[in-house]
Length: 557
Image (tube, rainbow, N blue to C red; front, top):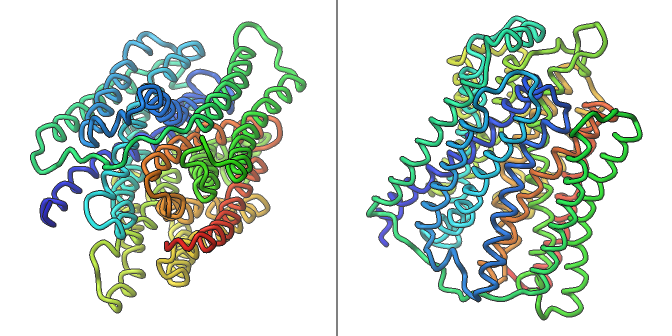
């Protein structure tokens, strides 16, 4: 393909990245709404993330297991283009199922919530197939050395979806902003706010999925593209992942069972639920470390997992997606939950209702857009001097778009709020100048900033704590391409398989948010952010150890 056709193909491809961002960020508004509407606790509300991101894992695992059974890469036999089309059609089915799943549901009908999770799971399965195809597709549309920059560009479009989704979804569900949380609850009880709006939203999303599938199908400038590498069996890796799946679903299955029927919610039961969640989390970490240890002694049968940078990178993707999702998903409860009769939340700020938190969630996800737009600058090959200017200008242009989008949606941030976030953006810009496009240095820099931000959020109060948590989006923004690039460096013929293993580890978005949700139920929502500190700390460790591993292998990165 020539350069012009590559650009046209990339333009078409990034539409699916927008969808992923829009739906993922809309969950952050949907979660607190579900908690109020279905009368569920914080852990149950986080099952929205479990269903959505768990589907990524299950989808990628099924493709790997089936490919192993027939000794042929299924997605590669379809071609990346067809893989995306099939994924869009599957997501459309999930979106359309949302209508009958919630038909006639009234406030407090918790059982209906689980039908909502099934619909979201099917949407996520489609996204898993799209993700498995679209990431290597973007890298294949040009020089592999600039593949990470194309992923950053696609990520910037993805983040635009995450920025406007909370505003759009909040407007569709809530309309005008209610005065207080009590008023919102009363409006739901009076059926002034119903699931009809959610049904219509997902019907509309389903139609958009079909239109996108048609766009891909009829696009003549978008090649089918297939990987030239043959399928590499990895029976030990396959068996380990199956065992991990059984443990995870065993733990979550038991927890689900404790929510059905007339069960007295005691401290002992809550502690048992938390213990099982920690076991599920420990199982992921333990299985990956087992693969790391075993494959280093006897690499046969492990496939791509015999490479330490890939195995440790799987855990890095797990913690990265987990922290990115959990900070945003639990943010709504942090801002909303009043402590005692003061009307203030744990941060000492006025407690907000479901509609009022949407702009702050938009600001969090907007932070990811800010960073990814900066990361995409290299795609356009600016001169050295111009690049320095763009590193300063582009982040604030992106921030202005985020603020303007909220203004259109009816939220006007105060001067103090804008100033707080502008300072956070300035810190991020400093990080970019310091890292100088080096993936290891970038990951180290932003992991350290992430740890510091979360610690400030845990220990501080007021706007300082709030904007420390919000800055998490800024520091997560650039991590995906860094981790992905470092994890598959030097894999050779195992690159395709390694990419599939990394996609599976989006599972972090399914496991870590519910763990934080249960920590919030047992302890407090602010202290539950210690889990975010731990995630950033591991990413810092990964940045150091992967450099050592790759240098030992004489792999350039």
